[in-house]
Image (cartoon, rainbow over all chains, first blue to last red):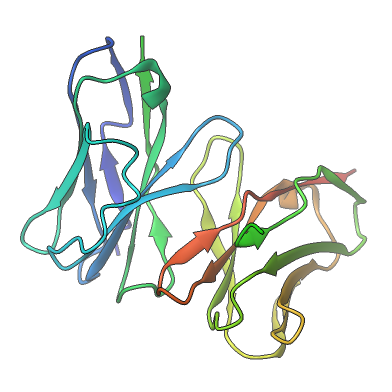
Length: 113
Length: 110
């Protein structure tokens, strides 16, 4: 079956602009996760969803970051007023149930100029 | 103490030899352990999961878990150049999250 998909695959934006990143999880997976990976660095956990609910938003780097999930499927990660330090690969993963094996999407490479 | 620790490497292993990757974790109540492989510029992909003490084998890969020592390892037998990648260890925590280590870079020498 289809894996996790993310769009866009690459995004170049100017400092101060808002960006929206999309994740389409594997069908039937109830849990969805967002991570950030800067060049040569490990995975930085951002937020997870159980269904449409995000119980813990403490991993988001700042209040410029927000995420939502609707219909228990597609999720969007929004970064407002982007800064250069936001440049990274944003990875989405899903799992059948919360904290089970996660399957990753191809990522969105964000570059803020 | 970091929650999940891995040697960053690079770990260089001759082709055909056994590559041994190690991971230690701090939370004694952790129950789920995962090894992911990440090629440069690609997303992580699951190699093995292990939940109980001992060894779990899958083809050329063996995961070893020792909860008493809070240690999980991944052995790769008959290493191939295609095994060259960064290997990420992931562990669940007492507050029911999964934390990833920063990864070990493995380089298989032809």
